[in-house]
Image 1 (cartoon, one colour):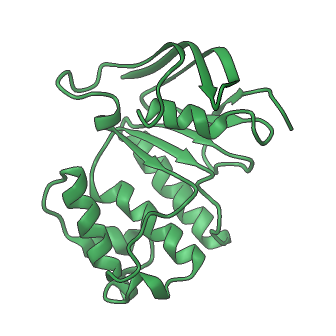
Image 2 (image 1 turned 120 degrees about the vertical axis):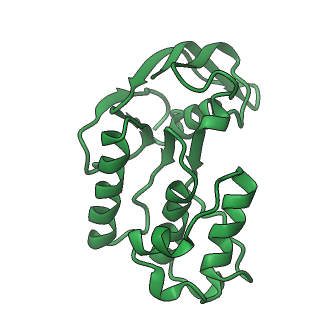
Image 3 (image 1 turned 90 degrees about the vertical axis):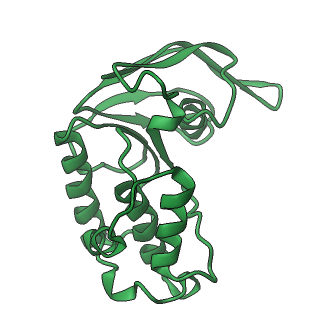
Length: 200
């Protein structure tokens, strides 16, 4: 499986963010997208996830499920945690499983993998920033998708959380998944770098 971007251009608000960008990542590989603020790192992830329209060039997935689009085979983890505060930790995870069309699963296992099994019945409103991030990461485990698009994935995580997430990313890559991550910090897994220039 290979994710390919060729000659990709992005225009937002009438301003060209970047143009002519080439990139690729294959099964078992991580690609770290780096660059100054405003250079288009988040925009690139959102283009790949199908949340923004590509202004030029193309982004595609070779070797994935033929009947599914790239966005249907990808998880997008933004820098904001999309949680419903009135739902419990477990209910949030089940909501995402149902929304994303995943198979029945044991929510406790996904929560245990991110160290949140003790908080399964707690309303998400009571979680700390780091715990909210861990719950968002649990969503990656609840529904299996080969492509992970991660925007500043270690934000709000303490040292233990960063180490835990590095292990989960390593497991995903070892199972043939691929990762594209916009980051200012080391991912904790071996990654090639794609640097995007632009405004500081």
